[in-house]
Length: 62
Image (cartoon, rainbow, N blue to C red; front, top):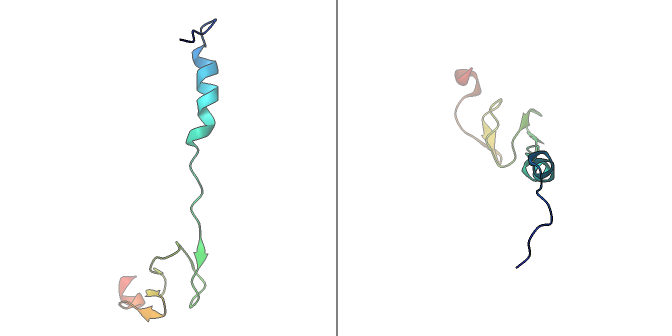
């Protein structure tokens, strides 16, 4: 079985592990109806539409 020749310090170990846990920036899409920024495959909160269909009243939400 392989045995390390010397101890790996905590700083060296943590530097090696640091780049694996970076969060990805969420994708942002624009609403085709009003042009507001929204998450893809989600309801637009500005105009309350998704996939060409209206869900509720945008004025009542605000």
